[in-house]
Structures are given as C-alpha cells and as structure tokens.
Amino acid sequence: MPARLRPTAPLANSAILVGDPGRALLLAQELLSEPKMSNHARGLWGYSGTTGEGHELTIQATGMGGPSAALVLADLAELGVRRTLRVGTCVALDDSAGLGDLLPVASALAMGGSATAHGAEAGKALAPDPALSERLRKALGEGKPVAIASFDSYPPSPPPETPAVAADLQTATLFARARELGVELAALLIVAETAAGETIDRKRLEELERRAGRVAAASLSL
Image (tube, rainbow, N blue to C red):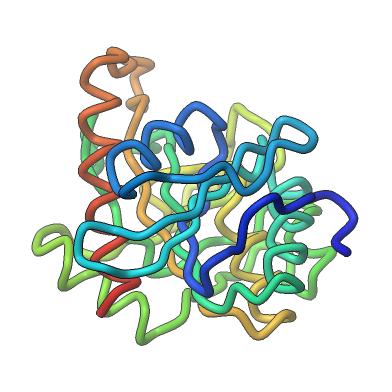
C-alpha cells in the first residue's frame, strides 16, 4: 500500500497531475463521465473515470511544490500509473510569455533541491518524455515548446543567461522523479502571472484550466 495515497477506486494507467485539489475536481467534472473519488487522504483529491471518448483516466492532485509532487508520483507509479501529464500554472520571466498563454514544456531547469534529490544536476535542464511531449504539442495545435525553470520557492531569480521564459515549483522535480520511476511524463503550464506582476482573474484561469485539461486528456489517449 502506498505511503500517502489511499485509493478508494481503481486508478487508470494514465493520469493528469495538478497541484491544486480544486483543479483536480474541476477537471474531473470537465473530463470524466461519472467520476469517482479515488483518493482524499491528506487532502490530495484524486478522481478516476472514463472520458467521453471512452478512455480510462485518473486526475490526481499533488499538493504544492516539488517534494510533495515527487512523493505522489511515486505512489501513483506503485499503483500502476505509467503515463502522466502535469497541468499547472507558472510565472512569466520575460515578455515572451503572456498572461494566459499555454506553454508546452520542452525542458525544465533544476533550480531547487527537490529536483537534485532525484538525480538532477543543479542548474541543468531535464526533458519530458519525447513521445508524450510530441503528442501534447500536436493536441495543443499552437505554441512552441519552451524552456522553464523550476524552483522550490518564489520569487525566482534565474541568472540573466537562463533560457527559461517562465518559472514554476514542480516540473523539473517531476521530470527527474519520472525518470527514476520509468514513468512517461510531460507538462503543460498556464501563465498565471506576468513578469510585471499582473495576475490572471479566476474566471479566465478556470477557462484555461478546462482547456488545458482537454488537451492533456487528448494527449494521453493518443
């Protein structure tokens, strides 16, 4: 039995990972027919069910930050999950990423200890699963895959030469842990805050979360 998750319903072998439990519920309602709560332990809400296209899918909250996400991913792998796609938010680091943009992640710089704890070299880039990342790019149909940087706390302060256009708290750690576990993982991020400090309103964010969830589900079903 996994150490953190306490499944109350069977899990699919494909999962969408989100940090926020509220986002897990939102996407379960958006994507699944008759979703069943598959986990509520530790406030890490998870739901499993069948998409409208007939594909089995789990949607699981990971909590905030890389350490929590890595632990949840390990539990999911123990429960049979083999393909995962992170849907999360990020902060733009320059003007190349605009508020509300959906960013497929081509690489994530390991800028925190939670990634290096799982074999990443500090400051170096980690890549998503190439096949799943390509399916994500095709399902999204727009936007060039980008480099991001993952920190263990905000505000991020990458050196000027860092190629990252945005920053988050989980992706590099998840890439590193997925590599250790042999799990396919890719990531799609929503720009929720600009480099100038402008933030997205809640209604617009929920619209983008739903869209990102649909793209993620399509990517996992291809």
